Length: 280
Image (cartoon, rainbow, N blue to C red; front, side, top):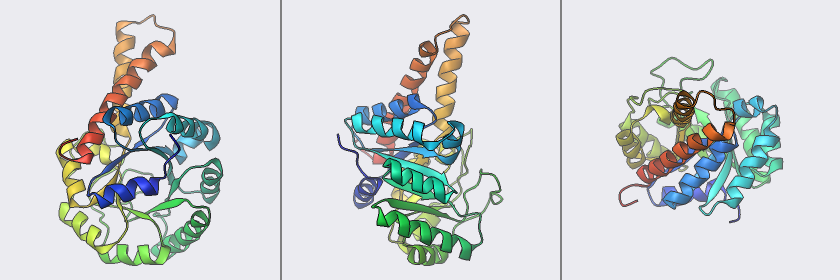
């Protein structure tokens, strides 16, 4: 089907008071697994390619074009998003390649500098029909991140959205990137206050550290886009390890990457249904 925009997906989810999953692509098997999971669930999904992943592949173009091709071939609505870009040049590259959205992350900068840099990127992207996510109240777990306990202030969030014209806002509410356990304690009351303070979708980063019940409650409280990466990578790696433990002489990567792709696809379908709410 034709490539759908992240804005359309998140608008539909926010209007329906549901959540949408945004899952990170590391290699093409991840993209295929995420799209297959969306097809199985019959629900929209967002493929995310981070600046770190682009660096791993040597450039954004190889993994970006592969993700776009996978998205176009899917039966479910699939969008392709640039995640955690700190480089304006990388944002422009994503726009050139056909990404429908970007997450520009200037959250490590002082507030006024974050506003200025984000406003400039947003204007450029909007001129090219691309949706923009930004971050305020830096989410933990990234290099240079604030100490645990940092939270986004609703009044500051309102002012930031108004000053930058961003289309979505990633907020700090208790989750942290790269968590290996699913025991993060989210501040659901703060999520609701943030939802009421801004008129754009809220984005939950670090959602791998949030259990199933917490994910569902976060959506009810006001989260729309829910980012998950480490949790799927754990499943992917476990499947590879299980196959290699059982077949120590295996040499063909397809023999162990295939089961890993299947494991991720099944979990994506399951998580999408949780985020979509009861009855899915």
